[in-house]
Image (cartoon, rainbow, N blue to C red; front, side, top):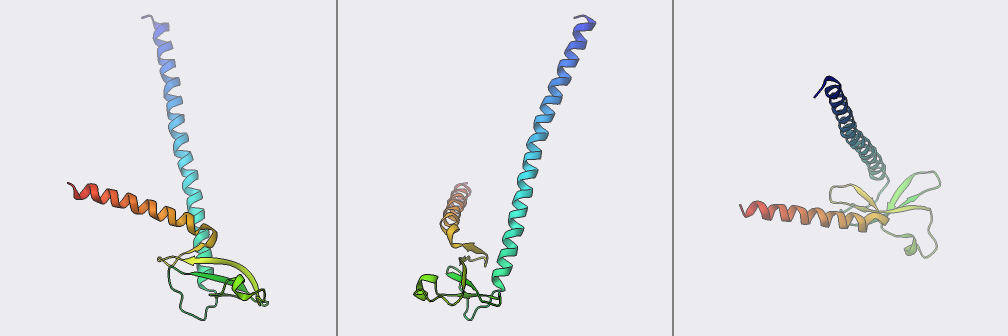
Length: 137
């Protein structure tokens, strides 16, 4: 191979290295963006959970139950065991939403309870199959 051919080969190799490196760095950048979004979601959920735990409540909250959040005229919030339907159209305050208290004391909005339950079932199956594989060894 002549000198020009070798130079072309080195140039081609350099282009492939740059392209491959750029592709790998793009994957890392996408992962960083995803992790940043996950961190933002976690912080937002933690803020919501803290606010919900600070709402007034005249009963002991029990994980696994749904509670209904209301706002008084003075902007204070409180939990009730009664849903808006159970007030028979005479709800005394503004309804803000219903929340399921999880066993880790986090809150799940009622519209996401089924999704969360499916996620927990999936995780349980994964853990169960992983445990079964370890037990067989």
